[in-house]
Image (cartoon, rainbow, N blue to C red; front, side, top):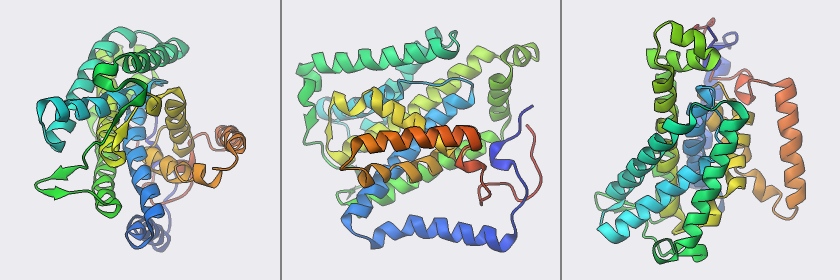
Length: 324
């Protein structure tokens, strides 16, 4: 069996581990004492963590989706339309969007999960483009190319998350919850089964594992996390449009996952923390941004195949290796 990425590598000295944990905690708290721009980047980072964690769950089962932004779109539009036409609140609307996404993922996954490698990637890319065209053509309900504006801020139990500082608290809580969910899953038998299916589907099936069922559960779960990110994004930005969920957005999620670490439960968190602020540094030079992303991918794949999560840090186990 393969080894858990979060548990690989030698143990770090306790003082260094605590120092790194303190640094991560300080990075999480710092946005509340910073300006609006830093808070905005922090919110976007948390949303990306949630979405990329969904992609990580799918990738952990041996598949790579190039249409992940489409499921973010289904969650965003589903939650907004449920609130607008059914009168649902934020939580109910978000759950409706997540449920709709899960149903779409279930129907799609039942068909395409028989495909492997590049064929699966191409079909998910085609699905993303098809959904974008449907949203563009459905002007009567989706707003077409103009999208939907004036979306009300998130509100839970009378508390409105109508400021960046408040919304950051909500987004941070949910993002860390998704990391905790992946970490707990990796230690459970179902998480071990996912890794076994990714490593050798034929061998996993010969041991009695339901390969199709496991792949479908991982696919639906990953898409549901993406939908949750979409519902939050719609409420934070206050606007959704088809171009907010195009293929380049899906590619960005893949880059975050690869650079963070495809096989680590911390990959989405690390990748989003590193790459979310970078576009602001390259705002005046888009081509330079693309060159940097390409160079970073090449270097990571060549020298750090486990991603940045493969470097020594508090995300590694306290001792030894843990097999699965």
